[in-house]
Length: 258
Ligand SMILES: [Zn+2]
Image (tube, rainbow, N blue to C red; front, side, top):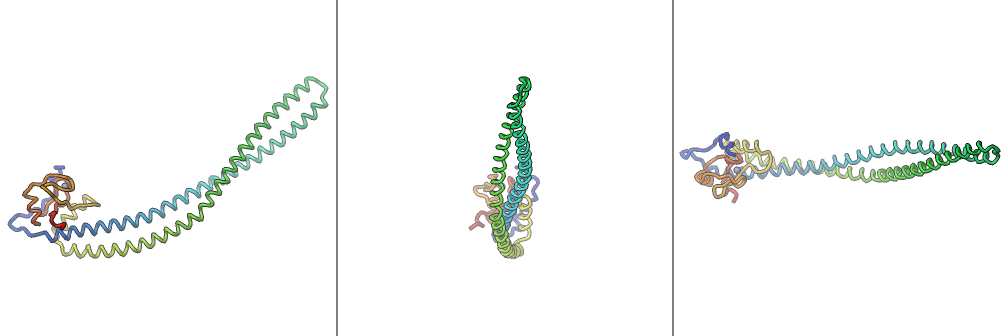
């Protein structure tokens, strides 16, 4: 923390030619407030825009899932047709074996036929099981496809609504920000340039949030760093431009707030 104390440019005014910066500090507080409002407006707009982006992304995800399901369904159907075809062929073969068994006279031939029938029956059973599983998968696939397809009209509607909201938000933010910026420019113009420069230097360090810090009982209210009493009293008289040695924010008379 002491690091800042060494590196910071000092804007301390000698007592001989102190100027009262009190009013300028008040302007600075207002400037900080206006800047905060600009940031908030921009964030609000960015939030609206993100909603649209997010929804569009969800829609794309659903679309690619749908494509995946359609491809799967094609393969599943092909596979099912294949299995059904083989199954029908095997059943015909079993029926033929059964006929042959009736007319067989040789014991060895009978055993062979029975073995073949048993093996084929097992294959048929396995295939029927696969066919059943495939049908289930096809059902699941089709119902997921249906769910996704049902989603789309809602998506379109919501995306359109959000798009309109974004347009409205953009107009609103633009108008607000323009007004705020005009007030900011006016304030900057009537404020002591040294103070503006000091403010900007703190702002460089902290892109958002407070860069003005008040002191109370010789402590920075932002970072609790101890401020020499003498400096604190000069600050309170609006006679000093200085940075907090702890957080490098611009020290500001607390009485400015009221
Ligand atoms: Zn501080």
